[in-house]
Amino acid sequence: LSYFCLFHSGAYCKMLLHAAKYPHCAVNGLLVAEKQKEKKKDSHSTPILCVDCIPLFHGTLALAPMLEVALTLIDTWCKENKYVIAGYYQANERTKDFRPNQVAEKVGARIAENFSEAAMIMVDSTRFTMGCYEPILAIYDHHENKWKCRDCNVDSFEDWCEAQKITSALLEGRSYESLIDFDNHLDDLRNDWTNPEINKSVLHLC
Amino acid sequence: MASVSEMYDVTWEEMRDKLRKWREDNHRNSEQIVDVGEELINEHASKLGDDIWIIYEQVMIAALDCSRDDLAWVSSPSDMSSSSEQGTCLQELKRQFPGSQRVKRLAGMRLEALEKYEDASKQYDSILQDDPTNTAARKRKISILKAQGKSAEAIRELNEYLEQFVGDQEAWHELSELYINEHDYGKAAFCLEELMMTNPHNHLYCEQYAEVKYTQGGLENLELSRKYFAQALKLNNRNMRALFGLYMSASHIAASPKVNATVKKANVKYATWATNQINRAYQLAGRGTKENKCSVKAVEEMLESITMS
Image (cartoon, rainbow over all chains, first blue to last red; front, side, top):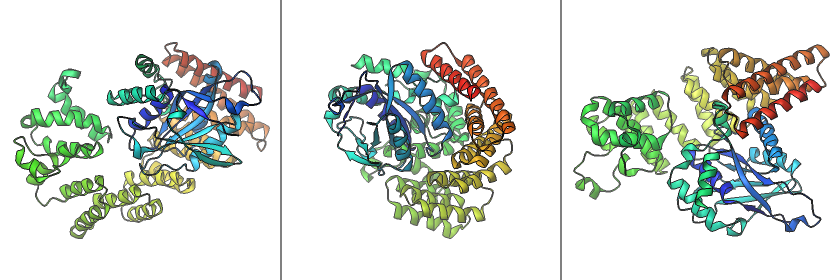
């Protein structure tokens, strides 16, 4: 079985904006997909569309309580919006370090418990440019309790040209300064982790 | 491109004060520091008085973060001859304070930014030769180890440093983070205990300690974590992490098969209280946004789940 997920431009863009906002920190977050109505027998042929991204934390990622809170709240939000938590992304603190660590594997496994085709995504910061010339993700699938790396290229996107154009434009415009992650939300509850303003900007550029 | 003062309608004094606040709070908002600082230096240097030197230092470090080598230090001799403006930050500091250890450290940081770690290390060693108690140079050496991914060595060096400089809070906190990243929660807790002892009114240390204990797991640690989340709340009743943490720890304890009915009842009470406070906090913050309604709903579900068990 090989599942493949497709990234919506907004989801990709918010991941990179999160990493850009905190270049000196590790960052992580969740990816959500639309809940599929029926589970077809040959579901491996239906791609999972990662429609949105919820940035979670920056800095120290290896603590449990706030992660549990985030998963609980975001799970409820997903149910309201007919989404499902479909993936986890992480960018490590050190640029050259893009291998999944214990945190990534643990959270990824937790998500895979509820969603078997869950993907774990690592951001490769060494290839991070303002122009976004190529996708900079490594995608890992959960097989037999191990995480296996799968190639991520332009085919992993609903529309790579659009994703590239939007992400580059928002990076240039420093939109990452207004990106809200769950940490920001905990600092001030008025901070909205669904990032409606950025979503608007993405739609404008589509 | 519009200047900072134009875009935000601020005076140079306000810009200077903003830089000072960022300095005092140790904010790493390097892009903003460069934007504000560069304009201040270029347009208002004469008005800054002696403040200019500390601003040069602050802007130089921020410039390194943003790869603004033109601002931190000229990259080639030809640039030096062509500039009729004042020199870059490091140049100006070297000119004003020749032979200064503090400026030497900045030169070392530039080498670090270029990933010339061996040269940077030598720079710091030469500072330490003249002044073995120079804490800044020692901490930079540890930062190099961290940058190279040598966590075990960084931890070892930092422990040695703290044996000598036992009151260095920044160092204790850095060590706690290094331990957390290595999943060594016991040792991280020890570092935070040191910090709580010397800063009993700091709600952040209490709250972080509670998070570490919670992560360690087990009933005893959960109960400790609940106590410290509660303590953090006492010190600052608006600490949302402490409030959520109190809810999480209390409800986990209540749900544990190992606790007797009295303990269970008490923890259900704590968790319920916490949920109501969380609800209240969301109501206060809310503008009726969709996301907010979801959070409120989630919190209500949390409340139901405890009262049902």
